[in-house]
Amino acid sequence: MLKNISLNRNIVIQTAILLLGAVLFLPGLGSVHLFDWDEINFAESAREMIVTGDYLTVQINFEPFWEKPPLFIWMQVLSMKIFGINEFAARFPNAICGIVTMLVLFNIGKRLKNERFGLFWVFVYIASLTPFFYFKSGIIDPWFNLFIFLGTYYFVCFTAPNEERNKYLLVALSAFFLGLAVLTKGPVGFLIFLLTFAVYLFVKRFKISFTWAQVLLFFAVLGFVGGFWFLLQIVNGNFSVIQDFIIYQIRLFETKDAGHGGFLLYHFVVLLVGVFPASVFALFTFKKNILQKESDENVAHFFRWMMILFWVVLILFTIVRTKIIHYSSMCYFPLTFLAAWYVERIIDKKESVHWSAKVLIGLLSFIFSLAIVVVPFIDSYKHWLYRIVDEFTIENLQATSQWYGFEWIVGVVLFVGTIYFIAFANKQTKNVIFVLFASSLIFIFSTMLFVVPQVEKYTQGAIIEFYESKRGEDCYMLSFHKSYAPYFYSLRQPENNCSNKQYLYNGELDKPCYFVVRNVQRTINKFEVEASGAELLYTKNGFSFYVRYPQNNLK
Image 1 (cartoon, rainbow, N blue to C red):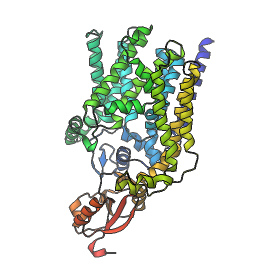
Image 2: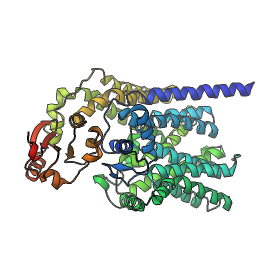
Image 3: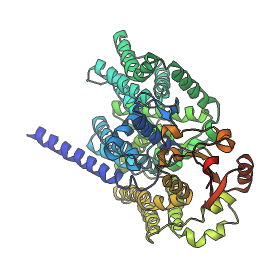
Image 4: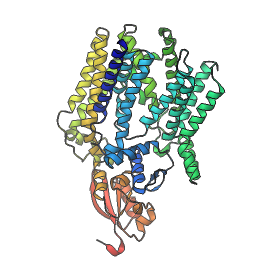
């Protein structure tokens, strides 16, 4: 009887988590255009798979794209087959990933400690800024990170002192999910695990119990799952794609790819600010001998693995010269675990909220709140910004948005929740922590739903509008800055994939060619010299739009 009650309760909780995830992550998925580069990059690869019918080769501009394996692209293809080629379909796989992640965290947390801790971990994760934001995006990292985390988790279980599950099953599951990570974004998925395991071995003085049969099983499953697409490429004679892929992965470590450089502590700042408010609570777990306060051996074992995983990812991508915000997003799992662990101790009166936590939470909350309170009124004061921004930004700000007038309340919600937390942190501990994370969740959800769609109009509204106006037209199109938007939003066809600048600038065209140039005088002057036959169509919000017609079809 008690077993049935427990089972029913578990089903109710997991159903509630599933429904909550759907409510949080599905609304507004298609309300904002995809952003360059990554969102449009992956969506365009999926679209081109559908157009060409070639589901083995990842392409951009109908040419082989060797930077990523295809698993996430396949997810988007399936989504686009169901929902059509649009923003909602491109982001839908990550909304599903958000729901799956919530269920994974609950079940791991429940198994590790109890039901309450599982719910804490879920709440702390989804109420933090960038972890939530990524489930509303069309980038590759949410699934990539989840696969690495699951692969690591099952290996953590394999090395746990009191694990009762079949060791061979745990090894196979670990290798399976790590293989999926490799199939999603490449060998770095296995590298992160390998470095984490190496540090763990060092900490344990290389004392680990295993059989060679388990080692063989691990690499057999990993090789089959992770190498599946690579083997298919070799079988089909596309070994050069594999070579280019490997060269690109090496280049990411050695250079500032695509202009994405940054200062040394870039990812430290990104995680502290982006994983607010969880990051602030997690800071207090980075203390010597912190595990002396943890009596459960299995929890302590998991804690060590999460701490190692966090530092491995953070140090690895600090070394990597290419600095992109989502490179360190794998840290979200260990960071939110550490935060949930510490929050539970605060609620159980085993720890108190330190004054420095109040100060840091108050400061970050004030910055976020102020930004959202001010942004909806940008059309009223933007002329004051013209003195301090560059000419391209001035042109961007010429756009206008349709603000509803209540968006500023979103910032006030977060700030009021923070003030309540600061005032009563050590008096009504459980309530104030709930209010803080709840206000953060409302803040990010509402910002994504009401604020981001309006802000986007200032940044890329004009160029997306132009690209969409050329759908169905047999033409060439070239952006003067690197962008995948012309491909996706004009629904480019294979016969229009020409990117030879000399031909498009001065050659004898067989169809019209449109050019999109940033409306910066130096850039405009350079373009007009190089493409002397191009005619200006119009300028709008920071961009100038030109056209060259075929000589026998001048207009």
